[in-house]
Image (cartoon, rainbow, N blue to C red):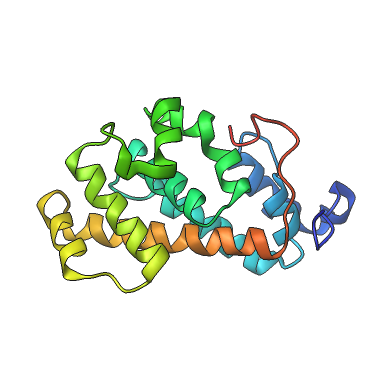
Amino acid sequence: MARIPFLKPEDLSEYRDLVTQITGRRRGKLINVYRTLLHSPPLAESWFNHINNIRWGTELNGRLREIVIVRVGYLVSSAYVLRQHVPNLAIQEGMTEEECDALADWTKSDLFTEAERSVLKYVDAMTKNIVVSDSIFAPLKDFFSDRQIVELTLMIGAYISHSRVLQALEVDLEPDQNAGI
């Protein structure tokens, strides 16, 4: 059960423009994370813009974005992130259910390219160890531009943070399996 009660539509009339902005980018849905974060409208707006820029404002392709997000979700045991992205969003971005499942223990899978494996090593290092060794970082340069590496780094960090907030506040899973769509 959520530690902070979800705001109801009648509680949000003062923030109608912000709610419209959020639901407009989420196909009309106000998901539980925003029903929680809207207790602080300025931070909810900042969070919304940040996460949307991380997801949609980069040079990274959708498949790679979902690989990063789903792997972070597995590493930090974020049921909310996993439920939002697997399988619907990940499949929309070109992944298969088998690949989504394999991300739980990707080192035992041959489903990922060399570039994707370099990213997965980076995700694991940033999430588990915080300090990233040169041996993990250097291979990224073989596949990605400096801009893309910065974007990967920010995406990993953002989803670690996103997951921690969801877990600390115990934000409930969406009741609708297709909530992330």
